[in-house]
Structure formats: structure tokens, C-alpha cells
Length: 61
Image 1 (cartoon, rainbow, N blue to C red):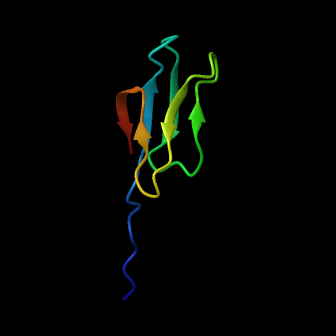
Image 2 (image 1 turned 60 degrees about the horizontal axis):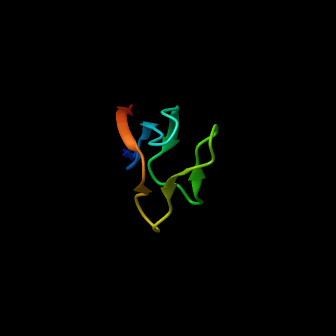
């Protein structure tokens, strides 16, 4: 019997602190993520879970 592993990270909906744009990003980004509207940094890679610079509104399954 083979056990199927669940992913350890989720997608999250965040709100930009500058322009209030809402955007969905992955919880473990491999490169810096910026806002699509105003280009403010929203998340930085850390080698594991991201360092979020925006407010998390919702964790998506």
C-alpha cells in the first residue's frame, strides 16, 4: 500500500498594505512576489515558508 503525501503548504489570499489589492500567492514562494497593481513586495523567500509582508485574508485548501 502506497501512502500519498499531502502538500505542506497552501495558497493564501493576501491584501497589499499600500493599494489594498487582493491577490492569491503560494505559501512557499521561491522568488520575491510583488503586488500586481503597485509593485510593493508582498512575500520574500526564506528557503521554507515565505516571509509575508501583506495581511493574510484567507488560507485556501
